[in-house]
Length: 357
Image 1 (cartoon, rainbow, N blue to C red):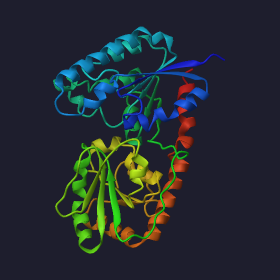
Image 2 (image 1 turned 90 degrees about the vertical axis):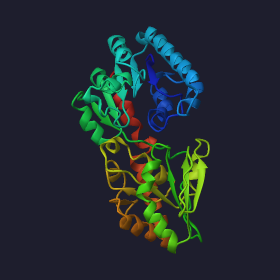
Image 3 (image 1 turned 60 degrees about the vertical axis):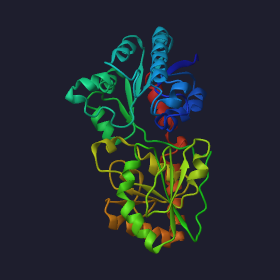
Image 4 (image 1 turned 30 degrees about the horizontal axis):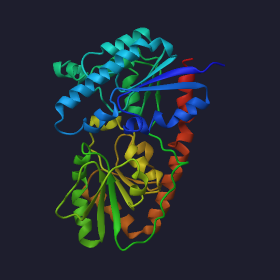
């Protein structure tokens, strides 16, 4: 049987964006083994990716954006060569959904993969939303033959526009990682990993960490693309890199996942909790959104209501009980293997694609 061709239209270069890397990009080999021929076209090239989230470099950013639009013009010329167009987040970042409409016009089939609540505030019909392209997700929800989302809360919203919706959370390749060995230590490492944009959530746990530091020997390890400092918390910063992500995470004994209870969070897939769980680290997370679906309280992690007392309660419990850290960590790893691994979810992805052939 002749291979079916898929064109992946991605915002970021291959392997760079977490929303791509921890979702469909992990399944490329499996798709190819099952009869699909894959082509990827990213809006950003490596040169633009290196500077896009940094201050300055305005001219280079404009030039890089123009290169992205030229790539999309070229993609339009070849749309009919593909059986499925797989779109992640958006086709182009700015303006009304013109490119999205043109792809809808000429594509044979479309899969739309949306991550986070990127459509928020669109319904206000503000001019700024049109400039920033925030109405593109709504158009793509309507145009797509199938939609993949990363949380059940997002699925409920999308169903207003498209009935063919599948929820697949972030997943990890458990065949290429091993869990850490939990053991008693003089100094316990409590950790957090994220980006500069989510670092604001650390304010939720600061009071508990300060209180914990008064009676226990701890360090706070932050793995991020920006440094974190607090005058009353002993902190060690590591710059996040894909190459050292797993080995850096394994330095953590207890992982934290604080979140505000706000609408934006409902679109998250529990990725940070899963990152800890994948390497056998017990996670304490805010009891909100997808976290309550990922973590089974007291079995493979802990869920708290963002009070200082609750954060402190379970931090003390895990710091003082290394055997419990080991038990919870082992259960967490098993949960990832059984429900949130590439192996556990690959056929769900494949079924979405095959249903459109």
